[in-house]
Image 1 (spheres, rainbow, N blue to C red):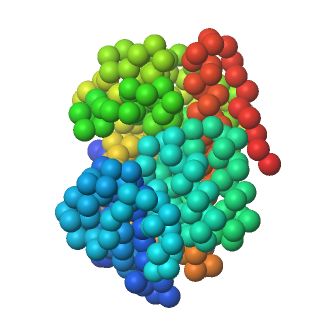
Image 2 (cartoon, rainbow, N blue to C red):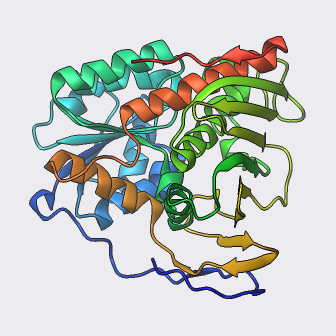
Length: 360
């Protein structure tokens, strides 16, 4: 992506989406099963799989009627309510898991045992110890495990990562993230009603911690936090949080997350020794937002081309299966983000600084 210098210009937006994403030709017609008849699968992932050459063969939900309705609406030939039925289908080579958080561990382990490649929605699990077991099981089975941390696929975030790595704003000492909004009514169910599902920490924090790790190429080592159930949540299920992380390379990360603050434009700001990068409106499920570099009191707008975040994620997953690349976010990336979110949740609950557990 070419950078165009333009002093004192307004921030540039993303250009229109380009052509259909390239597919991994050897995997064209790849058979997929969906585990979870979820909103994200319906609105984004089914189309992303098809756009990258995949065939959706079956969808599984514990509610058989829900699975059947989902399959009919999305023109998927099969549906079932039994995980074993889906996993024993020899035409299915990979699964996308988007069930509730507490189901991920069992379903990933079962998929690995069945020899299926796995793209799992975040969080990888509800406990990092379980996530480690899942990573090891997929390694042992020889299947690819990827985590759907789609924010890595944003052209804005990818450009930020390259510019930071190239030292274009000097040494980055601080990163600030504002990821807030009002949780859509369709999503106001288990996310903010069941403490076992992790509340805001296993929904937004895992994304933001993973994004910080991706941008800085550092991992979190310690966390301090405040959190509460302000409107949609409760004392045990937080819907509003602020926290700070110390990263392995010495950078500080400050994050504000909320399910209960409407009309907020997201921000990701990297502050370096020689300038700043400012991304606005990028923490979304579609390829949106703007990027500005500020150096010596002048703004430089960075024009970028939009993409399909989820199709990019699927393409990278297919590349890993074909042996030509690696996932945008590996299972170990998902594990690291989950360990960070666990530390943030514990810090918010105890009011104390918490070390982030590190797994080899």
